[in-house]
Image (cartoon, rainbow, N blue to C red):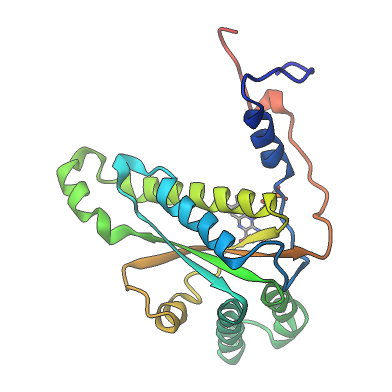
Length: 217
Ligand SMILES: Cc1cc2nc3c(=O)[nH]c(=O)nc-3n(C[C@H](O)[C@H](O)[C@H](O)COP(=O)(O)O)c2cc1C
């Protein structure tokens, strides 16, 4: 990659790369939104519609939780962790000093996007393309990750900060029950978002030349 900024034909390409560079993990978030809820909904719905999936299987399922509904998912996570304390799996002190403050910080944000994969919906295609059968589940996760990344980047573009969490399988059953979701929706990730209250941490970059090669330039 040259050291000078190349010229792109479409200025939107430069803007896209600027958004890619700007996206970070923000843990300090507050219960405010720079945009209307309808705009957040529109953004997430477009990710569900347009992010690609292998063989166009459209395996991602997404739930957008705002305000009080967003509080519920982190209350469920706190309850689940309290269950671990009661069972003796998680030390009470660790829960009180680390786990609970962290979960309450997520709760203090504005919303959470829950990302699921419907692996069951792949049954037909696995049969039809038996040669790829063992690949479809990971393809579905890869497609889901693309949705997560798009929503994360787009929310940040609108003035939110966000962080990506993984409390599955701990909260799976409670989440499914709380929002009456189909049993085939398997929770993968939770994207927490709100207006940032603190800057992201330092980020180190491993040398690009160890990670990227170009041939034929
Ligand atoms: C697939 C994936 C899983 C991640 N899981 C978590 C997680 O469970 N909890 C968390 O706090 N951050 C999680 N992160 C955030 C990463 O730690 C973070 O993206 C990375 O350190 C780079 O920092 P940046 O997001 O500020 O660029 C995850 C990120 C990715 C891409």
